Length: 369
Image 1 (cartoon, rainbow, N blue to C red):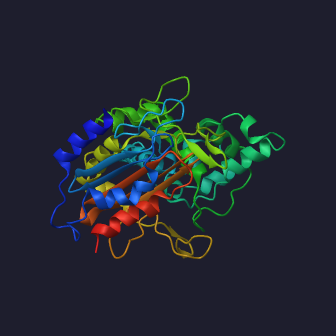
Image 2: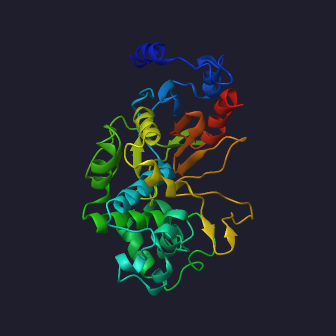
């Protein structure tokens, strides 16, 4: 049924514009990039290519899980992992637009009980990954030092905040360095809750998912909701596949807890183009690369990095780009947006042995010259 409906959908929507440098880059060329993932009994991926705000390729490869062997389709929901961060950032930006928050507010303005090192950390620092907050993953492991990883209880965003409040200092002075921080985005989720007075998942639903009709997208909270059309994460082992769907950090929402599908993410991409949630001026701060007190932001290796609010902004082969990858146990994801080319690629995988960004950029190379 899926194959038939997909064929109908592709026949209706598959039309590459002559404006693309490689108009002959048809479904066959894209399909060839992902053909190693074709399977009726192994996990795989869902792939979306959007041009001029229209899905021109949407296809599933492999199965959602090894128990049901349901084929992956356009409605299959994957854990987005750090792809989530652009949605968390948007929540903060909406609160700024509402006048309930400022980017230069400090952590202790919102949580007065936070340790004194939070006095120097601003909302902008959290969004830009230059806050210096300790890694909550490291703190959690230290707390359960003698416990096997699969026996460590799952931590929630509120638990992350509590762990960070118990620390006496950050890893570095806020604003002095750039270091990717899951802790920062878990704290941002808690800021959304404190300022809005609503649970983070509810705020996402009311202010982003429902207005954009992303009807199957949600922040997954075990025991509170269920993921429709759910894909489960997997890891390849010598004797086959093992389901590796949850870890001690999988219940944290702000840094990676959203599930979505390529069909819903096509709506998200269109909303970004059309400024449906935030005006162009309101979106601008998210597209300004982070700076530090020592100049441009840099990876620990010394290579310069351009990161805004929930988006990596490094260009690709001369093309302006907004991108983000996601990685968590059993899942790997990417979104590669080329706004000036009106061209987007999304790859969502429920297996840990592929590189979605690399695959997506192979598709980009077919069309962007």
